[in-house]
Image (cartoon, rainbow, N blue to C red):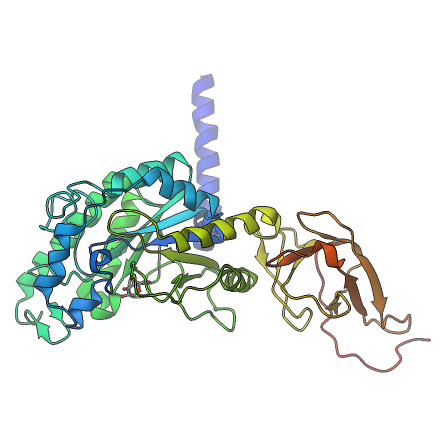
Length: 445
Ligand code: GLC
């Protein structure tokens, strides 16, 4: 009897819970780790790293023939590949997830796929499954996994597009051939799903076909059936969960609540030895704080070499970033987007309860004082994060006869500035309230 009652109570709980969960709540729950993560590392690794030419596009745009492009397979040896080292570097960069190119537009798969005939085990000098050891290591370190998968496969004999000037066939003339391609694609995706159960599907290349041709909605439904918590990026003809601006750092906060800027560390996705136009650690942190202050994530790319090593310069940037993030963790992870620039001339974030405002200070003003305007709360304390020094503060323009909350000057001692951004934690007396009224004449006296 007791057990029957227990089952009944459990049933009631589940159905009540079920009733209460709206699609919005569901999405909120599913996306929560993602919106708290702030930083991910993108990895573009493939045969294009042999010659150091652009990933897939070099043959698509006919800078090199397809045959010569594929010749790189013979030198893609991954001889110094050390997935443990990769993951250590990623973890120490402060990233909470990584997204790796399981297959780019050139169709070269980094895992031992049963489908198609272009993969790292059977067709390249490495003769190894390169994806599994990396993913195992990632999971061992409790980092989330994103699988980049290109919808176009320009090398596959039943895919319609080959290069920018060569098409194999027209879909409406040979629909069966297209179906063959779709079956191949689905087989690979289900195989990846079974093997790795990713946290994110990071699709790319949807621009080549309509949602109908890609069968995007059906694909999404099946992937979700297999893996209900998986997050899907926006490159599945807008059936995704979050926006993916690319390289162009948004000036205004994107409309979507969930977004991720993917960014090259120099000007290339894959390793290109000639590309020396690296962003400095300072510039990467500039972009990172701008992104998180607008409520997004940064997906910073690295491009390993054909032997599996990560270029020194890329490694150095990730290490710098990680050091800076570690010192300022509470201003970064699990925070919300900050306040408009009208109130503070710089990026900001807020803690979950919105009672601590974090100010990111890049350059110190001449008098060492930073300015915070129109905050209705009382500032209980302002201190330098990761250092603890309490700041002197001065409140100006606050008079008893109107509601205008005044202007706070916070003084940062010169000795305490960080080489990148100094972060000031402003502890308020409650959830932040921004003053939104027009300032007028005397209100009382
Ligand atoms: C683009 C490119 C591709 C790159 C990707 C990264 O869509 O086609 O080469 O992998 O963006 O976001």
